[in-house]
Length: 420
Image: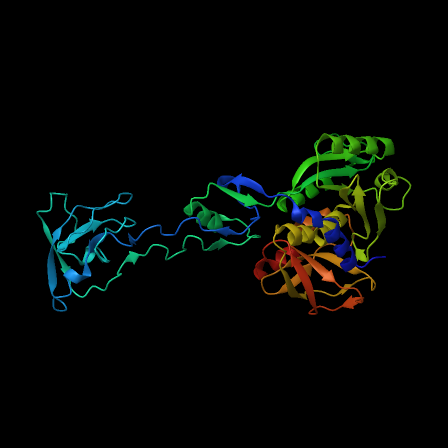
């Protein structure tokens, strides 16, 4: 029986080639949630030119130097400078009305806000016949955004591995980048097995159960940045399983095959039987739920087999596959792990990591939801955390500390009573 840490290393080793995949160049508008594949340097400076931080008057501070402090200086009003234009040079003894973000004219070295001018409003352009009074003692550089003060051309902008969200995309857009190199999303073939399993929405026959694994694992994989090329239900017929698998792999290349069910030691373990001729290891991990695990390759394609019970499936994904994708591809970001105080006592098999579903509250306590059974889907849906009861621990008391992996934001402690 492998330890959890050992199986984690096996999964990471299996998927290591995903890290070396050729980057994709995608339009900036399609890059949200993707991971930057290469370091990006700034192709231009930000700001690209000296510009005004205020609506006001651009001027030469030398024209104000001779005045006494507190004395206003009267300057000729030059032609206004709207944003998006290249202004004429500023003549000595004049001040140009300038809008926020507009290019500073050559010769100007400061801006006085319109509120400090007399009159404190702009004139229509009348050919330079008007004057304006501006305060003396204005320092050079006042309300001027200097070219490159945010980032200079050629400076590092974003490192490889950056998750591209709104702020990062905003920077790349401001730098004029229409496309961006990103790490490819892993393409996954997902198969769920079992004669008893029926697709949601179909009529349920005697002895049948609705398939939760396909929907749940597909959502998990897509939340983790993967592309699920196909997700299918397959019966416990070995030849049909082998034929479906061969057809799907021949149809389009995939980076990973994931199955749910059919990997234990029962009489109808279709995945185990169907992959007998492939380099796949079927074994057990010291974890509850999620003990049975399969790992290997199918025609050189990495393969992971998860147990068929829904809770075991999700715990397996969260324990093994999600962290591997996070480490190798840089997305999804790791789940936060925090210490929490148990709200109640708990027992656990001493030689296994037990993963219980729980409700973590913002006061630092965690309440277990449902039992240890791997079929308790309702309890799984109510949980916002996976509670880790480590190997070597058989009993914990209320108030003892445990590590929890957060699946969602903490709940308000005042709502604890509604979750009893």
